[in-house]
Image (cartoon, rainbow, N blue to C red):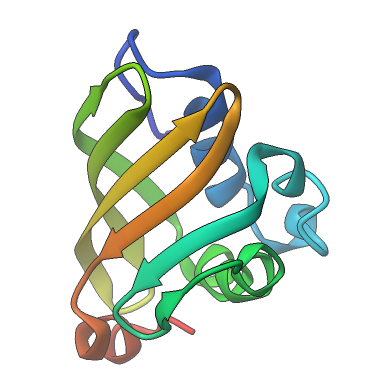
Length: 128
């Protein structure tokens, strides 16, 4: 079952989560995800730390998540004029785990992403 955001979610996030669930065979080098990201994505995550200007690195890094996630179930999402927050459970090879993503949006682009999850649990459950 595909990840389902609320009706108020911006299209860019609906596309983002569709790509996250699409599987690595369809992800390839991130060609479908690249147009959703600003040229200088500001990224923060537990394993990567803070990465300014991280667009290309994020495209490489998210491929490991896409290769291992089986399903995403949205728990709650909130959207404003320039940002969104999404709480979800991802089914990993070793079981489910919870993620929270906080986005800054500029028009139809994701310009910053602050990702929260338990890094050791992610690795333990098969994330890469």
